[in-house]
Image (cartoon, rainbow, N blue to C red; front, side, top):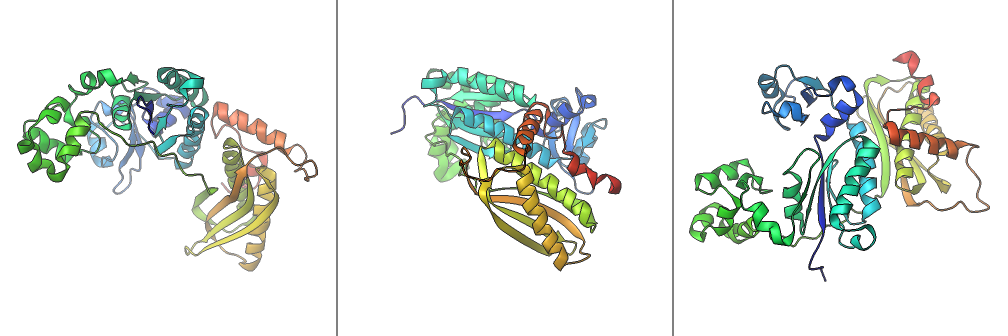
Length: 394
């Protein structure tokens, strides 16, 4: 039975992609930054708060954005970096509750109802999450705290950036009633305009409007829309499914045929996959290599490993052996994409007394690298072996 007084958080990172770019390049701090492609039909993937003042927003055509803010600084997206930071953030969420429903890389619902007995009230939990995110990633998040998902999502947007908005059962109407109907999630810009044309501008006007006004707009969904305007929402936070596999892959700017460089690229990919494994406290019993030729023909090769591991050197060694075998069968092949995947995932446990240990010192090295990257970012440090065979070709 659902608790009467639920505690739901909606955590939303502030201008996520753009904030990461400003964090990683101090020259961009305080600048109007647009993340997105500038060629052809490029669109805005993210906009910093400085550029939003000019009317620029995500999903806007880049040509329109640059017309609104000609002096904006455009940055090409770095999706793997954003995914790596997202992994750090979601790992923080899971420190506070197993009930985490991810909506995208940078936002999620958390049900902390049961967590309050150990961690304090919902506001204290929200503050702790914000502080953990700030300390770990040097980024800010805005959080809405409410009795349900709908209100939490609305609340998280009310005091951006770096906001914390709390809505209790007693203050629902006081907070929601004055808001523009445009803030109702799922309404959409087109429908929002139609609702305003009908003379309805606020949540209060929407929840008290007559059926004769709402039915032409919403039809059979009229009752549901009125309930949403009143802040009624009984949806559960649906925890994310357990991951079946973890992978890292790269598409190269130019096709690569040199075996030594391919092996170096593969080692870096194994490093990324294993870093994510360790962050989740998992080990893998199978290693897969994904290979895509210049003609888009795609191959996979895999091998089981025993005991299961999250050791970078062990996974990298298996991946390189799989690639070497494939290259022997396809001499001179030009490769446009490589990937390393790990599957058959289980929780990491203490090594069995009689299990064969990994390469000497590798686990300690992995832990050291993980700690440095967690503090300074995923790009802060790269293994020398990952660079050795790439440097002469770049």
